Amino acid sequence: MTNLSFHEKSAIGTLIATWIIGIFYFHSAWELWQAGQLHPASNFGLAAGLTVLLVIVLVAYHILIAVTGKPEEEDERDRLIAWRAGRIGGFVLGFGVVGIVVQILIGGMLDDPLAGSPVLIANALMALVFIATIVELVLTLVFYRRGI
Amino acid sequence: MGGSNLDNGVRALRDQRDHMTQQALAEAVGVSRQTIIAIEQGRYSPSLEVALKIARAFGEPVERVFWFSE
Image (cartoon, rainbow over all chains, first blue to last red; front, top):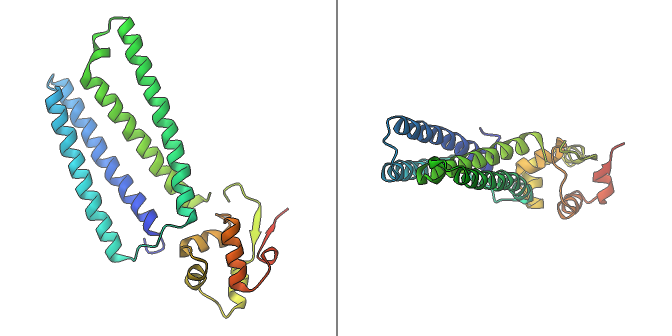
């Protein structure tokens, strides 16, 4: 990791932590759903708890990489990579939101009770944010390694 | 190479300047060492501002540092 910039190390750690905690969240939510116990309160508790955990892990990780290697100031290449990866992640998020809205409306027209489920809608949005974040972080690393 | 057809002589010019380090050039230009590495390896085409700063650091006209490859 010595030849990596602070921003690359940051992206790697954020990707790994987000992936592990995200998968754990969706696995737990699925288990609760299967057991018929995924209610708004339990879902909120699970999401809030894991979000706090993710923040703590990321703060600790960033302190560690800042202590072990002097962070460089962000330069034009870092900004260009962040902008391009963020733009594509934003497209994923935008198209996903439209897809979820369409699903809700079609479900409503067909009287599907799941279409109005706050827990399902919340998790669909959480999944979308998760996917868009992963796409953005993976592209960030690809742009750093392969070039931009 | 990120879709660019720009070549450069940054590495050769560093070697000609008593093996100026990537870190020294990065500090002279105001970018990270990793950005200098990416430029030398053709993975990043810098902005006009950074290209001019690199040329100035070597005391060369910019076209002797960066040029279009065929």
